[in-house]
Image (tube, rainbow, N blue to C red; front, side):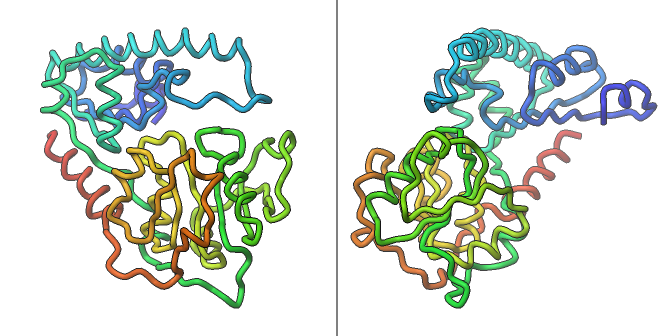
Length: 307
């Protein structure tokens, strides 16, 4: 509902859910209307409570701007100060409930938002983002008859946190293997593309991704920063062999998946895939960690408890 729609509505709302709260819209609304709600639930995903210059890896050369960096620094200081004030105010009124998408996200929320630790601990819960039903209702089956390449990557090209440069290093170190990258951006306008890599600059509908994954042997999905990493969680849930980064958030999310292998980001240019071979057989008994029963259903139950 838009702000104008809410102001015209005659309904009596009890609970407000703020998903990834931003200063421009969410906090403005909360400051104006918080008194009308018995409980305000915040769903915290990452960027909204992080100083981006500190957490996000430095942009690729062609994307760097000193002005943007300084602007981001100023905005983030204002953002974190404002959010700290609003959380403290609402905690005093006993109105706050927080859903974090990971333990990592909760830890770094507490590092950056100046608020009461006990209040956060007693009024928060870790609830992961759910995998799309397309990855839950189907299971990976390698389609040898329609095989396209050994590895598939689905990533934005221009965000260093998604490590397109790491994928290039991995491909260069494994010239006998083939790699397909799906994503939009300008990275390869400025960097050479290895002979064993093919780029598809297009967006893929989420419902179509499982069908595409079946034509590849393994997903290659590095990351330098995530609060959960939903796409990798979905691929793991689907049962496809997957390589991702050996960083704390990936371990937290995916350590129980037998089809996931972890590589240190410093090792992507050194790993020889023959020494790190992943089988392509169907994996049985995959965790249901990102199924609705552990995500959406839990969230609904916690919202009901607020009434």
